[in-house]
Image (cartoon, rainbow, N blue to C red; front, side, top):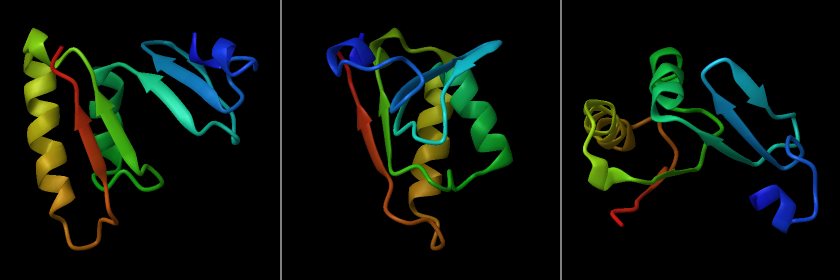
Length: 92
Protein backbone atom coordinates (compact mmCIF):
# COMPACT_ATOMS: atom_id res chain seq x y z
CA UNK A 1 0.00 0.00 0.00
CA UNK A 2 2.78 2.45 0.86
CA UNK A 3 4.56 1.81 -2.44
CA UNK A 4 1.28 2.31 -4.29
CA UNK A 5 0.68 5.63 -2.54
CA UNK A 6 4.18 6.68 -3.58
CA UNK A 7 3.39 5.64 -7.18
CA UNK A 8 6.17 3.07 -7.37
CA UNK A 9 6.62 -0.68 -7.56
CA UNK A 10 7.15 -2.71 -4.42
CA UNK A 11 10.86 -3.38 -4.06
CA UNK A 12 12.07 0.04 -5.12
CA UNK A 13 12.29 2.42 -2.14
CA UNK A 14 9.58 0.47 -0.26
CA UNK A 15 10.02 -3.26 0.32
CA UNK A 16 9.13 -6.09 2.64
CA UNK A 17 10.52 -9.25 4.23
CA UNK A 18 8.39 -12.07 5.55
CA UNK A 19 9.08 -15.73 6.32
CA UNK A 20 10.32 -17.06 2.97
CA UNK A 21 9.74 -14.04 0.78
CA UNK A 22 11.46 -10.70 0.32
CA UNK A 23 11.05 -7.88 -2.12
CA UNK A 24 13.73 -5.23 -1.79
CA UNK A 25 16.68 -3.75 -3.63
CA UNK A 26 19.72 -1.62 -2.92
CA UNK A 27 17.50 1.46 -3.26
CA UNK A 28 15.01 0.23 -0.61
CA UNK A 29 14.80 2.74 2.24
CA UNK A 30 11.63 1.55 4.00
CA UNK A 31 11.26 -2.15 4.72
CA UNK A 32 8.27 -3.79 6.37
CA UNK A 33 9.01 -7.04 8.19
CA UNK A 34 7.73 -9.37 10.84
CA UNK A 35 9.11 -9.30 14.38
CA UNK A 36 10.64 -12.72 13.75
CA UNK A 37 12.63 -11.41 10.80
CA UNK A 38 13.87 -8.43 12.82
CA UNK A 39 14.90 -10.73 15.68
CA UNK A 40 16.88 -12.87 13.20
CA UNK A 41 18.56 -9.73 11.89
CA UNK A 42 19.52 -8.83 15.46
CA UNK A 43 21.11 -12.27 15.90
CA UNK A 44 23.58 -11.55 13.11
CA UNK A 45 23.99 -7.79 13.71
CA UNK A 46 23.18 -6.61 17.24
CA UNK A 47 23.80 -2.98 16.28
CA UNK A 48 21.52 -3.07 13.21
CA UNK A 49 24.10 -1.33 11.05
CA UNK A 50 22.50 0.77 8.35
CA UNK A 51 19.15 1.06 10.14
CA UNK A 52 18.21 4.41 11.64
CA UNK A 53 14.57 3.88 12.66
CA UNK A 54 12.51 0.93 13.90
CA UNK A 55 8.74 1.26 14.16
CA UNK A 56 7.01 -1.53 16.06
CA UNK A 57 3.28 -1.78 15.48
CA UNK A 58 0.65 -3.94 17.21
CA UNK A 59 2.53 -3.86 20.54
CA UNK A 60 -0.78 -4.17 22.40
CA UNK A 61 -0.95 -7.81 21.26
CA UNK A 62 1.87 -8.60 23.75
CA UNK A 63 3.64 -11.55 22.20
CA UNK A 64 6.84 -13.02 23.57
CA UNK A 65 8.60 -11.98 20.36
CA UNK A 66 7.61 -8.32 20.79
CA UNK A 67 8.59 -8.29 24.48
CA UNK A 68 11.97 -9.84 23.65
CA UNK A 69 12.47 -7.44 20.74
CA UNK A 70 11.81 -4.40 22.96
CA UNK A 71 14.36 -5.60 25.54
CA UNK A 72 17.03 -6.20 22.88
CA UNK A 73 16.41 -2.85 21.19
CA UNK A 74 16.62 -1.03 24.53
CA UNK A 75 19.97 -2.69 25.27
CA UNK A 76 21.22 -1.99 21.75
CA UNK A 77 20.34 1.72 21.94
CA UNK A 78 22.71 2.19 24.86
CA UNK A 79 25.65 0.46 23.15
CA UNK A 80 28.54 2.94 22.76
CA UNK A 81 29.26 1.91 19.14
CA UNK A 82 25.62 2.24 18.02
CA UNK A 83 24.77 5.45 16.18
CA UNK A 84 21.46 7.06 17.07
CA UNK A 85 18.61 4.55 16.72
CA UNK A 86 15.06 5.84 16.86
CA UNK A 87 12.54 3.30 18.15
CA UNK A 88 8.85 4.14 17.80
CA UNK A 89 6.35 1.89 19.56
CA UNK A 90 2.72 2.03 18.40
CA UNK A 91 0.22 0.88 21.03
CA UNK A 92 -3.10 1.27 19.24
